[in-house]
Amino acid sequence: MHVKWKILSVLVLITAVAAISACTFCNITGRDTGKGVAERPNYWARKIENPKLKNLHKVSDDLYRGAQADEEGMKELERMGIKTVINLRRYHSDDDEIKETGLRFVRFKLEASDAPDRKDVIAYLKVMNDKDNLPAFIHCMRGSDRTGMMCAIYRIVFQGWEREEAIREWTKGGFGYHSIFDDIVEYVKKADFEALKKEAGIK
Image 1 (cartoon, rainbow, N blue to C red):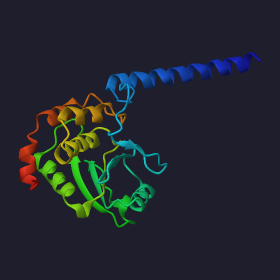
Image 2: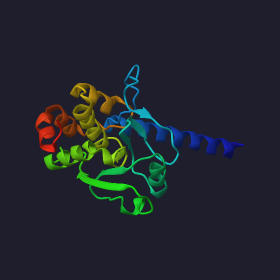
Image 3: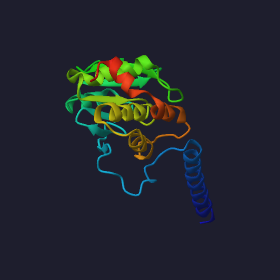
Image 4: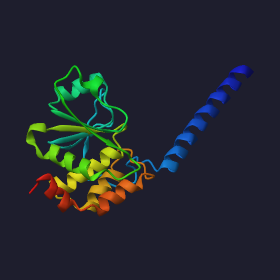
């Protein structure tokens, strides 16, 4: 009995340490859990529960967002009617994951810690302005930071959202945004989207 209590005590201690570590990590990185919003607006991206796709949300009829998908996840996206996959990861392509699908593939090598290159933003806007590419699925590794930035840009350029609301959805919507990546938020706050639209041929 004494041994059992020792084992139980150790298990309880391990669980407590793990919980504290998780909370500490969230506090250090400022990871958004969506709990900071009293009532989540129903016009924000809608979460879709799908065991094959992590952090999946529907932004609009033309755009879905999520984390990196594996081969089965890509096949699931195709079954959902997705036409184009937009990959924002610098060091990982989707070549292996999409090879058994008919999905189109576009890649922009972005960093969560830096503002995107102007040419990449313009190219992204061109992709989203071409109806033949839609609906599209956009992702980075976790579907949180780079993905959130590009979805905010989509909201502003194509849906006419105010910057503040697009950023609020991105950072408070429960997608897992990390506040340490504030440079990309500053980019969205200050970017000249009218000039970017013009260069992308969007009227």
